[in-house]
Each structure stands twice: as C-alpha cells, then as structure tokens.
Length: 198
Picture 1 (cartoon, rainbow, N blue to C red):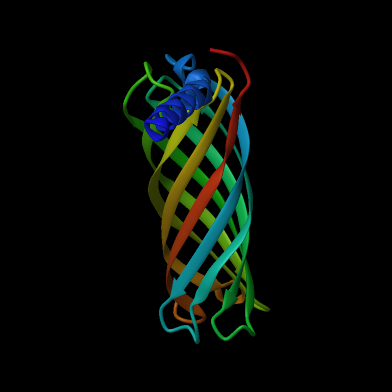
Picture 2: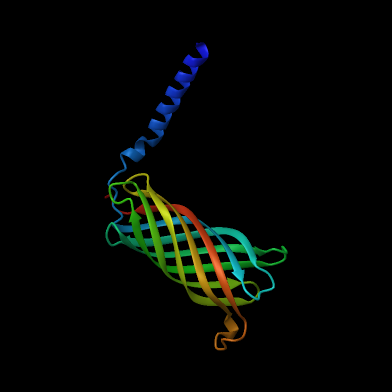
C-alpha cells in the first residue's frame, strides 16, 4: 500500500515537472519564420575523397549564419563554417571552410507549431588546406529541424551533404591535375535569433 502511494506521488511529481518544463513551448505556438535572423552553430564535418591517400575522419568546428524569411515557408540563408579534420593515420590535419548560399523550405507542421521540419539546398564554395590548397564550388542538399523557444529564439539541427571535385588551387586551370571527387557530410547544431519579434 505504502509503495503504491509513493509511486503515485512520484508519478504526480514527474508529471508536474514535465508540465513546467514544456510550458514555455506551449506558449511558443504560432511562430513566424518571416524576417531577418542570424546565429551561431557547432559544425562537425567528415570528407571522403576518391583516389586520395586516406579519407578524413569527423572533426569539429564552428559556424555563423544569417538569413531572411520571405514568408512562413521559404527562407534564404547565408552560412559559413570551418572544421578541422584529421586523417585516419593521425598524421594529417586538414582545415575545411565552407560558404553556403541556401534556400530553406519548411515542410511541416506549419506556423501553428513551434517546431519546423525543413529541407534545404543550394551551392557551396569550399576550400581545404592540408599544406596544399584545394577549392571548388559544388551543390549542397540536406534537411533539419528548428524549434522556437520564444518568438525571437530558435534552436536548429541540420545535416548537409556536398558533392563535387576539390581541385588543387595551383592547378585550377588544369582540370586533370590535383583533383579529387569528394562527398562531404556536415552536422550543425546551434541557435538563431530573429531580430524582430513575431
């Protein structure tokens, strides 16, 4: 009897705690993604390069972004991030920088919810420095989620994939020398500040 009563009391305390924890989200409904926003993010990356001596393992870094929501469905986003990756042998260190121009399309559940699930795509100018400089402009696509904690503040999680050929900078005029076909995966977790309340 005492055990059953204690279990019911514990369940009541847990339910009350969850209600308090999620109360801000229940009032954060009907959020708009229109207007100017900017933010920061942790940026992790890995790079697989065909014909290279070794692939690059996942490495961390940082990033910045800014954009404008044209309406509650479409946003235009400029993103920068930089990560330091290491080779699997442990002797190679590569700094990879990306400049993205992206279009973000909110898929669901809509403006009546603090949650957004989105798809994104665009073009990425990237460079890799490993004693030699490599550069390219390539297509990028991905998706993610955005959760509004208040009318001005949202947290974001995004996965991006970039496909293309990194070309040695000194050989940009010769498409057959110093060129590696690559697939890059990026994970971003950060926050966005909408400059005007909705």
